Length: 374
Image (cartoon, rainbow, N blue to C red; front, side):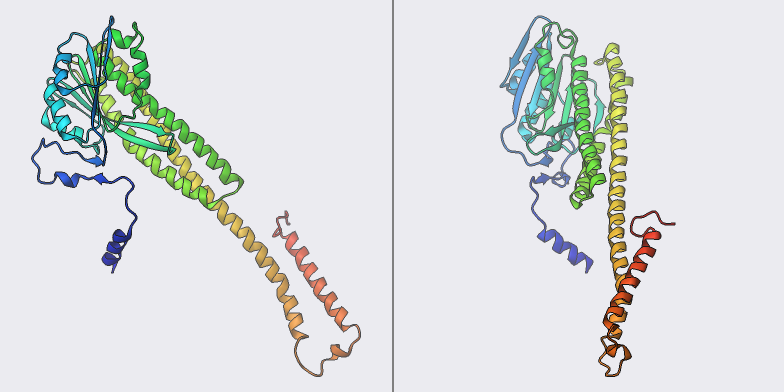
């Protein structure tokens, strides 16, 4: 019964707005096989490069993989950005041009990776999660960014063209900036730093939503607020999965002794580690706040429901003896002494009003109408 019911639910469920290729497509394939795993994407992958130094800055908007070895042979620093990892052929061409191992390319094509850092003889490979707020849909987006650091080159792989690296591109326009003076390992740090800094922009937006919900719940609980709280809880859980593993990545970078990472750059990663800890602690605080608001919403709803039920119970209690009296004199007996009494009608009314008033005063003194009581 349960199995058939589950099958019926899966058969009748609404279609996913963004279909996703799962890990199942890699079943049985040899290690190092480049297969894209993630949301279905449209459009072609695009390569963009910036070659810079203290004296020059060159931007190459439409780069082909064949040009990458020529850029890497220059004495300056090069940033190659790949927008779109859903084209396996482009990934393989970039991997061959940069000397990236097949297992690394396999990880780059899999957008469901957990943030991590891997060390190779010729390069460092890092997977980080980029979090930003999409203004059009007013939703949080989490995208995977894969980064490869070589001697004088940093290669980034993004799922799509939207990113948070705009401030970094602006800083590249300043001739005497630290990005232009230092080497590729500092630019590698700067990329991660921009991603981590953007975490706090998203967290500030979440704090505003939580405060607005808290005000609304305290003013008047509404079922929509409970639904919004559940959505917030889901978003916070997703953020936690994206940000928490970043602590391990940055911690590794602070302790890693590799020829590509200079000792001066490791100092910057120590500051970045503190920011990650701050972000994770803020996430935990927000999660506790959302759980408290859910409990508060349920408590206030129950309290107001109890108030309504209390008033209805009082009204019913007052009318029970009145109904009893009206029922007695509503019986169809021929001989009832009070029926022939001229003041019988008014006496019954007086008795009912007196009884109702006495009960109302008694309930008020008990505090059941919201008074203090005794």
